[in-house]
Length: 537
Image (tube, rainbow, N blue to C red; front, side, top):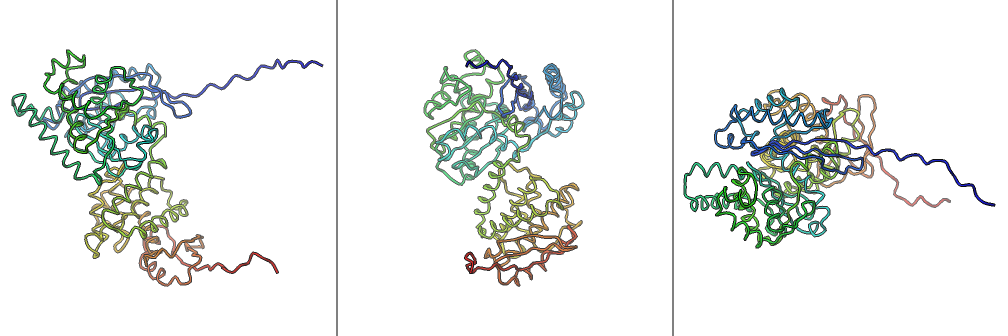
């Protein structure tokens, strides 16, 4: 008996949803826009890329402000970009991300520039700080680092040399252990040298000395000296890679040994900007700054005795696009990098790490249990964990008033990916882990906006309770459960015979908790039977 073929048409596969987005980078020498398509899997495909040169950095680095004529040019470029966005149908603010780096950030009239852009185009461009640049640099190279097995087991120095600054990240076996931004930019150097009015040979000598001083500062700041790979992210490095390896596919990594790279730079440096334009067909503006940028890379590679150099296509704009695919950056992976950075800072100041880690675990547990009451974001959860990890760094200065010393040290430290506002919150939460409560007379606390002041109070209250639970620094309290009984927040502790020390500490430190959450903290013991009860009679 023959089978009747199934002639019912199969439903057409659902069309994959794709999102068109745009990122704009307002830099020292140019404004760049990239339009990309993001599919449901989070994969990014570039659709269009535009670049318009503009002397923003020239104004800022020589005069301290951006001239009106340059502002008008900037607004014109942004209007042109807005028309392109309209043609692509990219009109929703959440699909457009625009950032400005050092040339706008350092200008005395930066707010005027950003306001003019917003009034003319409706695009809300932000001047990002150095910590955000470091974070975006990491996000841009994260997938590259993950895809290279050799980098996961070694130390890599990621360097992004821009027109106004150089971002440096040290990645040790997949963890960011150091990040900093230095005022060593290709255009900044060029503008500084032009004021010297020196001969070409003298200019090169001065340039080398200036770069070497900053490189020595970088080497002193890094916690390790054994660097196996240098990842050079700048457009200038990509230019060099394309000349050294004409067949290089920019969608892939270029692997170049230091000697070959250095030889190319040595040949390029004596050339005038006009000759570079003629030979390599780049813009005059690019030709002026390519030499200083590449020389920084050479000095860094030489200082760390790096033999292998990786040059990816990645740029700050890739970091912005990655952030848009994730719909934010407070991911588990990012939080893990921040926490690791906090651990490194704590080790620098010789903290009792077992106590700090235990208190951090307790704060996270309390934070999650109190979510209905505090309603704080995941960002605050990470900031609280960091504050717990570093709350006793002030003991490095003195055991007396160590909470105040902790505030100062944290406020003047850098943790990977955290803005100055984030660091201010962490410093204040650590400051309030003991003794005085937040007060209107505390200027740094009152300088925060209302939401951040409330967050500091809520997080400080949790940290004080967690710290009281490990008053003896012996990590005795581990198994906890929580309940709310009227105006009491009951913490039931299992497998601890005597909570006398913790109760005394709680009496001293839980006053802020009661003030913020309107509940008194009560500790109870709940002993668990340890006998073998598995077998019946």
